[in-house]
Length: 288
Image 1 (cartoon, rainbow, N blue to C red):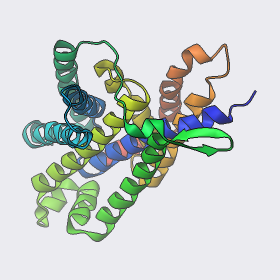
Image 2: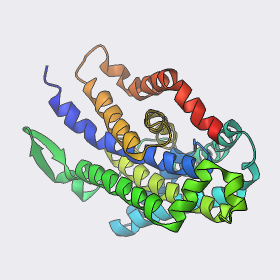
Image 3: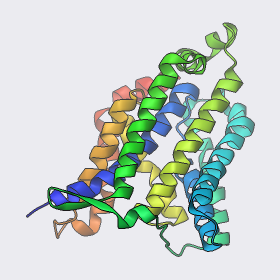
């Protein structure tokens, strides 16, 4: 059985899981919020892109609009609603993000329905051969984008004032405020960053998998699994875990008796991650 084609295919979806996981970790490190609405933000942006393409709007405009929409939604929640829960327990803050997720699922259902669609990019038709296996440019772009975003966020956190403020908030929110860190400003910036990540991830998933509101919203689970494997702290470990989760899911495709259930692989990995690394995850949550 040759699973190499499936492994290579899994690189693309794994890169999106990596991108999503890093977006979750950036927000968690700065605000202590595990954002369950991440997938819904991206799904809303992807639906807007699909609609604009149906109206014959140029592709680049549709892509930018998708990122702007997801970022705007994330900004509004982070600026208006998240501060109301900022002094509540970590679990309460996480559960709070389910509200916008459910609202967005309802809006997408009313406006676009639940009929699965696909975004199609010109890069889908271009490919390179890797070990005699076709790797589309879309998957290559997903991989390069994941690496570029991790590098960019790493530099942001280590070399800018905003990054310093985010790292300070990650250690002690109240003390950071006493020392002059603009807490609301910094947390809003984190919500904007995670909105950009969700918009990019939503676009890629709508192309690589399918465009459907509920489906894309639930794909936050593999991203959470990657974030937990990265101990909710390490960007590079989270990115690597996301890629490996995508590869593991794809590698199950040729196994006949498992293939119908391969979509459950990220959920099983998430459960295993919580079980095995539960102590680490709990420690990270307590630190918040």
